[in-house]
Length: 69
Image (cartoon, helix red, strand yellow):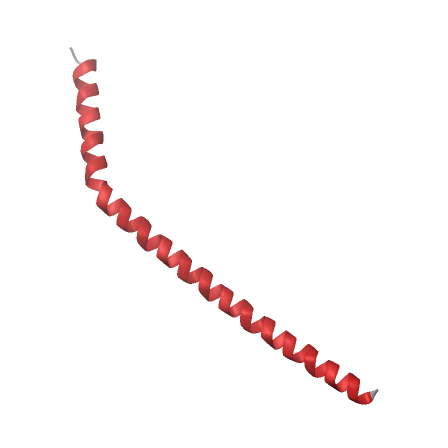
């Protein structure tokens, strides 16, 4: 019986250590995904920023000409 308890304790310790390793790994994976999303978002905003700015300027000038006859 003592041998069984000793093996059970080893198994529990090994499982606990394994869970600790997986939690750290998941945190790193989430950080990498968040970084990738941030880089992609910045890239998309940089690529479309000039087009959006030009469009807003065009709308603004059109609205100015309509409101000032």
